[in-house]
Amino acid sequence: MKKRIFISVHYMEIGGAEMSLIGLLQAIDYSKYDVDLFICAHRGELMKFIPEQVNVLPEISEYANIENPIMEVIRHGLWKIAYARLKAKAIHFITKKRNVASEDIYGIIEKCISPYLPSLKHYGCYDLAINYIGISQIVLNKVEAKKKIAWIHTDYSTVHVNAKGGLKGWGAYDYIVSISPDVTKAFLTTFPSLKDKILEMENIMSSSFVRERAELISQSEIEKEMPREENTIRLLSIGRFCYQKNFENIPEICKRINSSLFTLHSSLRVRWYIIGWGGDEQLIRQKIAEAGMQDNVILLGKKTNPYPYIKACDIYCQPSRYEGKSVTVREAQMLCRPVVVTNYLTAPSQIKDGVDGRIVPMDNESCAKGLCDSIQDKALQENISSYLAQHDYGSKEEVNKLYALIS
Image 1 (cartoon, rainbow, N blue to C red):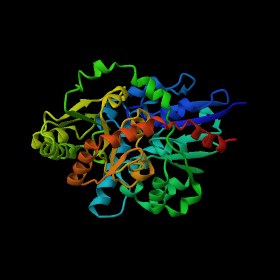
Image 2 (image 1 turned 30 degrees about the vertical axis):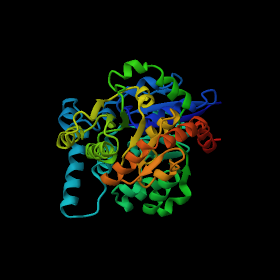
Image 3 (image 1 turned 60 degrees about the vertical axis):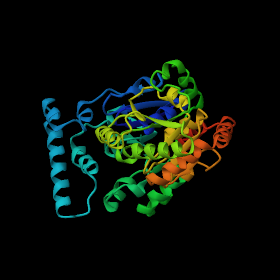
Image 4 (image 1 turned 45 degrees about the vertical axis):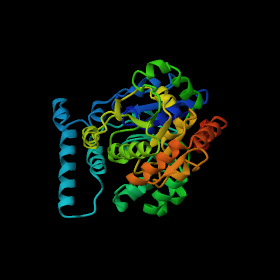
């Protein structure tokens, strides 16, 4: 008899964690496992990449409206959900005003809203239930399963949490999956008592999937947006427009690079392309204008298939303030592109500096210098690309660790 797995995710918008979920779903052996995927809101460009063997459970309005504006929730007649959201806002406001240690607003919303979310126990008992991305209360309280696990996708040293409140939630899981040793270390700094629950499991990604999709758009088409120009280096960054990704500092970094290159090589310049979307777009555009980089920093918007753009760039750059383990960095490595990342805490767990990428300082001046050095060192770029071509950065075998939990 097949084992049954339940996986919960908030939506399937383009993002690193969501892409790693696609990798996991593609790696599962469906001759031995049945997978039910519960997506709170059935939206996002990645919906179409869910393998056909996966049983996508029906959308439920209470879950689908958890993150929608409160007035929209009311228009759907979901008064209890609206009440819970307002209650959460009030609790967050009061604790913040009193300077009392509290969970962030999302954690408070989870607790307030959970009593009003429909049970999913009518789907029967699963061998394993996974909170992959999103609301922990779904797996903990709404699903029946023999074992329950949760994924950590971020560097917990950068996240403000109420350790006491968080310990109760995380401690309720049988296992907690960490995507890298550095992510584990940061998490255990906050929750040291949960050491025995940690299972390290890399993001599951398929090299063949990434390379095949990189060929779906011709390079001549890509060059309409990222033109190949003489004496011009094309840098590329991908991610949500948010504080974590640090994209608002790209214009100043790019300006410094171009100034340095002009001094050294008067004919050489950089264009820095950014693929993504999010709330900080206006801030990034403002910084582009302030730096006078309108011709050098170009926002390409959201792309369902970013891989042909990665293949086209000269250097892939991840200037983040923090990461768990960057999926786009790994994808760029699969496509044999030289990668440069800033020295966020978990960078050494993904990049061997000078071997399969470069790690540069995070402050704008030093970051620009490090990038400038990388641009000029053609031999290093070629050595990195050659090394990447000789190594498989896929990780499908990691799924065996999941199987071991329910064998």
